[in-house]
Image (cartoon, rainbow, N blue to C red; front, side, top):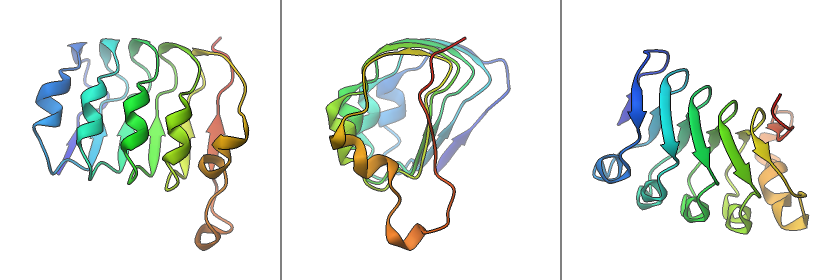
Length: 138
């Protein structure tokens, strides 16, 4: 299952409980909308989730530490929002992550060694482009 409603001028906050009720959900694509509020920790209850794209919204707050339990996540795109704070240590468990976009936010801190599995693709992906940009927002 997937939710793909990017670039539709959808406004409001994300309802984490409603999203988590879709137990078979694999992809959430809601980028380029007018979403605001915080990232719902409830998404961590979706064990099949493989991709989250919430870029170009007005989402604020910090990255949910609970999302570190999304061990099937292959890509996470949260760029160009109003997020702040450090990347949670729990994200070190996202070893299947091959795409990560966090630029255009106010994220701070350093990438310490525990993040290494996130930013190094497995040998099976040798030669595959891995995007990781946590640059400061403009």
